Length: 191
Image (cartoon, rainbow, N blue to C red; front, side):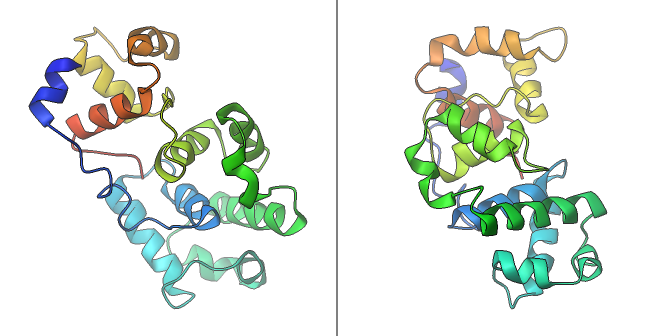
């Protein structure tokens, strides 16, 4: 890791936030759109989605009032449209209180987010890293990060979550920064 940091130099952490929503709801919508897509594809589809509302993130009610087929036409699958609607429903009902997430522990945030259909641990980790800037997150489910571990540590195959945890233990309490360096080493980051 030391050699990687020397080679890459300081990261522009603000650059990683450019183009991403600045509110928690928008960030979660962006995360759902980006699931299992390249960064470029996710950005394109997210742009088409927000164009349905004049270039901005729809409110939860606007999303629920919209024709799901119009949302699909932006490039989203039926399951992703259902996930977006589930998120909107949870926000409207108060089951997911976005304004208080920042007060919670990482584990509590993961529990709150994963209670919404379509928001898994990967999405919760991306929210912790890219929206809340939590310092000690290791997104063990991210394939790009797993590949970066394989390359950096010259492993014979993609490591398990447990192996990643073991290898990243010396990085505590800054595993987020280590993850950012590894993503940067691949010239990639999660959508």
